[in-house]
Length: 486
Image (cartoon, rainbow, N blue to C red):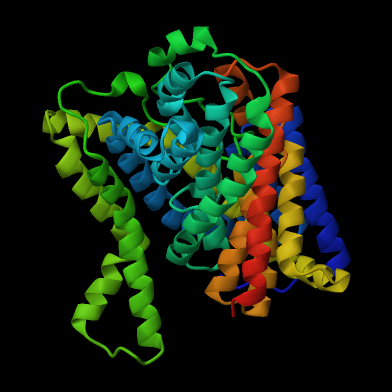
């Protein structure tokens, strides 16, 4: 939908944008309004203030809401189902045990973090953390020392994957808002997540956080089995730098009916969508360069590597090779159905965020902001990081920070005609800003504090600092890529 002719000048439009964001933060933080409702309310108010006619406002808002959901809902839903299948079949335990045995006891924190990175591709932050709790406590009890030596690498791994790698909703929404390639964002995001985790989480843990003595939270350790099933819920306003949805299920759902899958099988399932998307990107690139011609076979390869199709194929394979082992078809259907309930809130929030961003673009506010950023002389990637950081610190929700920032800078991205590679770097920069400085307005802060028995001061010294080093690591990598990619 093409933007309308602006009714007001750039100064007035920017004032409307600033007031809109302030009202949004007030509704979420002070009045405790659900982010889904707050985003819709602010979208309508902003549209009216910017001069969108009453007769067009509802149609414009709903149009942007629907276009965002068209991308987000499909990917998040399929990703949640894949994570559910891997979770209930014991895939997380297999990953952790195998990585620890191969890397050795001395590198158990590293092995646990890598296992969480792999498992974190399809599964949300809080769901992954719940599934890994018994593993973390078991490893900490076995090797001794502070539980943070094992907890921070695992929790940070889930936070890294959730922040920057599709099919998680934040990066999917940002890539969609900016008109980029979700598949390319995934291909770039996975290696960036690994590198940023190693620098910002693992090295930070071994040098500092892991030396802060925090004993095993025995009360939580004994109750771990009852923790699963629904995650942390959602208040719509805060999240881990991850998101404000709970995941599906937990350790109590792991079925004893069948032997756990092999490490190779679990790893293969996690790599399958990555390989399909890489095949799609490579084929499309070679075709665009004239190296490959037209043909039905190439069209099929490109189709199979589209992100929704790749995830659907992975889900079908995982359901057959894992889910059907010792389970009835009705049980499998129930497991997949359970995976969808907890993600409804995040899907609706991201859709409402897309609505807000769309209204900003349609009214001309986005173009006015892009012009003002150009006047300041800041590169757009730096502006994206700073805007996301301010929103993250102010209201806690990474989802709101991601979607709002993407909407605000989308006009500038369109005006500059950036390549998909540049847009992927922008998605990383926005995710970096939406990750830093997790504090008391973030549900992930309290989730980690409660699970591992830390007081507020200790959580600030460890989790908050770790999220900041992780976010800064992501941004430095994104900035470096920005300077070298075409």
